[in-house]
Amino acid sequence: MVLVVLGGTATAYLDAVAITGGRALEDSTLRALLGANAAAIASIGLPAALFSIAVATAVWRTAALARPLAFGGWAAGALLMVGAAFPIQGGAEGALFALRFASFIFLALFVLATSVSLLRTEPSAPKTARRGPAGR
Image 1 (cartoon, rainbow, N blue to C red):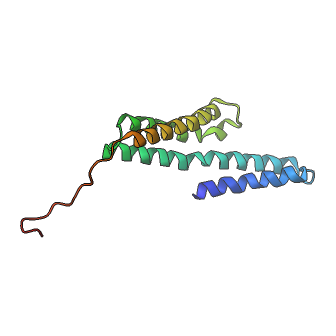
Image 2: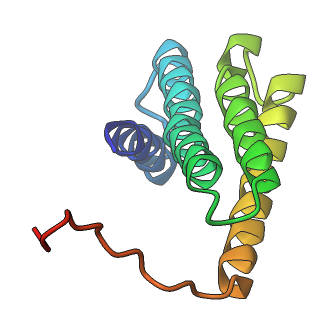
Image 3: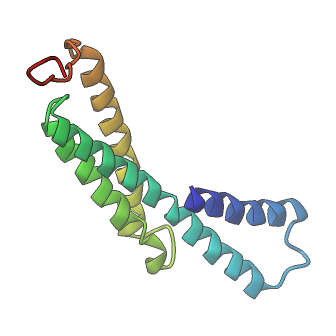
């Protein structure tokens, strides 16, 4: 949650610069804001990776859905974490940014596949707690 708030805050600075036209700011200030914006946008992928990995682990451990779905979630999480490093390349033109873009598409496909699998699964009877020998 903190990373998402930081990402939103960093983009708000650029929105303010766009509204004012940036006339009162020096080039070094604009470069610093753009760098902070790129880092903040990159950090938004980390909570998405955490979500993807957590859901994939739950799918695997509970076996409530098809277990192969877990591999898609783990792959999406790994791609999101690697894609979050795109500011290292210095811009949004490199292979890491393309990987980041693809990872969010992969995450959307994982969520779609998990949702469809969940909707198509027949409900099972709830498990009841086992009681001891005298009904205790």
